[in-house]
Length: 393
Image (tube, rainbow, N blue to C red; front, top):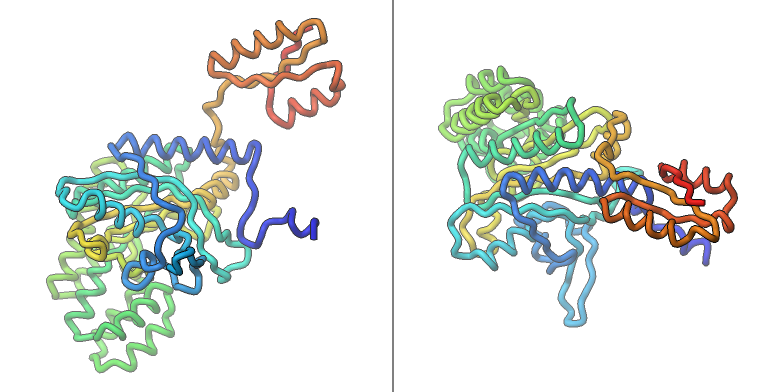
């Protein structure tokens, strides 16, 4: 029994020492970027009422939530996602505010998924939410933040893929596809499931030209040219407006030296129920999963009684740390001076004073008595913890 207790459950892990220090340094850099755009820190509870994450609000199937009961018998859930919690808090504390609200956050989320072996069930996320602003400028601001945040930790080769749900919804509305079939088709296209997409299309009473447009959607990804191609497929105002918005976003990002990081994917439709407009994901070498996820959710706050347009994103820190390691990008370039001060019995006071001076100057000082530890042990310890040895005899 004791041996079992020292292990963590599947999907969670311990982090300590240099790994944890590098993770904290990365988080600090990212948060500095978000705050530099005028975003203010917000903290919401680790668990909320179950209904906060269910139905139209939720992003995670009920079976994948960590659920439990409080003493009153209410069903609670560990948060799988920050956005519904922040939407709830905004509706509670800023119900009558109509000026833009900018929030940033960091913390852990919990999803009890068994889809992939080795995937963490507890992950650290950093993100931002821009509320009360439905403009293209808001979309661009959030995407620029993503670019600057990833650059701040040393990433150079990354791509942000952007889609727009309105393009797909406009097509469904134009050709009379009902809500149930729309959801099934949306899932197939989002998963790039060509055969599943075709099976659904074959069951619909649509002409071949229209079926070909939907069948083409999983392949509608690439540079700016894909927008021109997609525009040629549609005539309805909703889909055309979606393409025009993506075009404006690209032009504004290019003016801000971010265009090289942008691509488009009109088959990116997301399973998240609350997304309404543009959605995006950031990818880089060393991970098949997105390191950043985000999008517009103009109807979510209505679920809590506040009419407000909004957009946001989250950076998945654990995936980011993994790709930084695989790409051999240092995450601790800006480090304080770090010393291991060794001393003999008669020089302890001098060593304490030296350590105090180092700490007062922003450095790190570790004290070690030579009468307790051998020279070999001291050298091994200093090497393991990357400390410079200073001897006070």
